[in-house]
Length: 450
Ligand code: PMP
Picture 1 (cartoon, protein in one colour):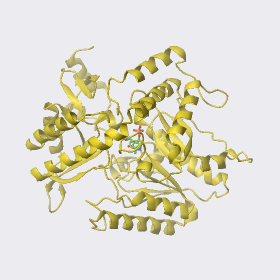
Picture 2 (cartoon, rainbow, N blue to C red):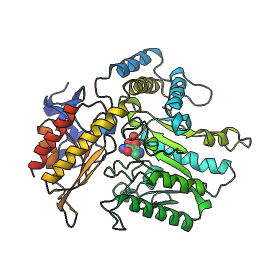
Picture 3 (tube, rainbow, N blue to C red):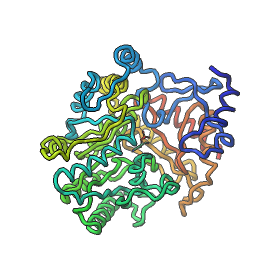
Picture 4 (cartoon, rainbow, N blue to C red):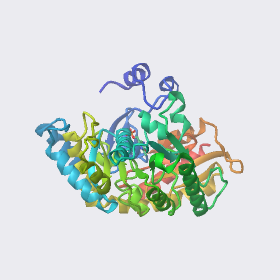
């Protein structure tokens, strides 16, 4: 390994980091990681910290998951790559499609379209939604509706359905035909409604109004995260997604459940849609599908949607889309081993139990520190603390302060993530009660720093 100074200097000089201002690597140098062990990460200076970020919501089984590592090595020795474009397939991708169809059977999803990551999954989901309507002879259904504060990725289509200006403004104009409605976010919403159930109803009404305004027969799909993640962990009231499902079905609009974060256990259920008792038409997955060890994803498609494509005789249903790495055999092998571990450990159960403990602890911290304006979570292992300078006005805390909390928390042995004025927690789903206590104690130290 190159020495610490070499790495720090060249990170600033040559490595253009994503989701960052290019000058930032100089001004706020990143933590440079060189190791991972159990649920912890180790930096270039040898400091070890419990990873309460779980990589980026994806290392759900931790950093020492030997079955996945072994599967990757074995597959590299068997077949390191081949394309799955028409004419060739591979054993691991086929086996994985079978296993995913079993895992997502209660969600009604029976076909897997493989991708190289989350944005790719969203891109293909949106394209398939438009094509689905064209194949059915409703070519006018091209529009997409999504939630404000929602995050769906960085490709132009995904970014166009994103509901946060931060990820759009520099790249506008976005794709035409994408519209946004308010998210059921009790802490901040245009209705000033604080009751989650009433807010859910208002948001569904807003969705119905938007559909009526656009014309239902022009809308292809509604895309939403079952629990908004990158937007600051926003769990809706349990009635929200079922109501959205009903509205979509009533108007012939496909429901895409974007589960890049929520699939495979994070919410305390096997999927976010199942958590709310809903069957989507398409579900996007990535991240935890390979435990973060290999870039991979899958858009899962319902039997009913697949049937429309499969029974087409006009030729309109040819899906002339796909990625060089769709169904990558090494990624598929990694996903197979990951899925086997997820099922063996039933990680969603631990996520639910530890998530409850973490959420309860965070609420106690909020009682202690005025700077915590809102605590969100309570649905598995995804939580956020929203930091404000004034609880009455909810004015966000000065920009540099959450980073100070993060720094102090890290020095105390726990890595947390800062997103705007939120501290986000999405630890591996295999953490223990002791780990939860450690996260809470380090956050206490971090918040005290303010
Ligand atoms: N959708 C959601 C809900 C996500 O959280 C993310 C990534 N955080 C994406 C899409 C994009 O995934 P990727 O970064 O792998 O392209």
